[in-house]
Image 1 (tube, rainbow, N blue to C red):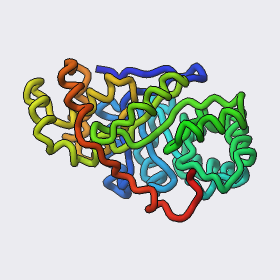
Image 2 (cartoon, rainbow, N blue to C red):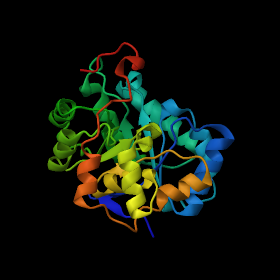
Image 3 (spheres, helix red, strand yellow):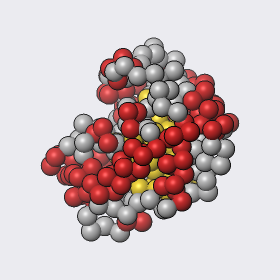
Image 4 (cartoon, one colour):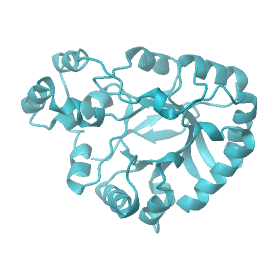
Length: 274
């Protein structure tokens, strides 16, 4: 089954399931991306921080550019306008692509004025070097500040940690009300939650794996999960989620699991996030 797409605020669309490539580098990354595209994935998510642009370039070489959606992200220390432009140009060279489908602010940085950051993204859109703009790890207050600083710049996506054990329900509701597509990194909780008996029972009921149950829950919420996988078997497993539905009891169980954030903000170093 083809991966469905979700509409974006600027009139475009985004495939609803992607391959996340965090910690995939070298030949392992090349092989994973090649296998994903062969299996039918149409959305690859990366970032400057992942240090795998050139590996992904090898995997997408020779493919029709319009046949896949490519996302990257600018790190929080590079959000001054000239740095954003330099980063974007470098990303295009490293990925060997004429444009990015989506470019995100990876983490907000209160230490750099939005009046410096946002005109660079507007310029990249106007020049066709990126097709859509979004943010990652932002709070509603960050998003409101961006809208105030650049009211004509459409924010299409918000990418955050999201999984049953970190169910950011209020943020999801905010995004839906604000016409933002929410993307989920670490959508499987880095496999920790897949070991829970509650999820195993739901999986057995549907003759699916725990990972497929969690991804189905996220798809039903109308978000874009970005599961990482390196083996062809796991890539195929994560793609095989469009032929079943969870019932309301399943969803209540998943939404009542103990909560724990996995991405620790202090690990990002000393910068002004708030």
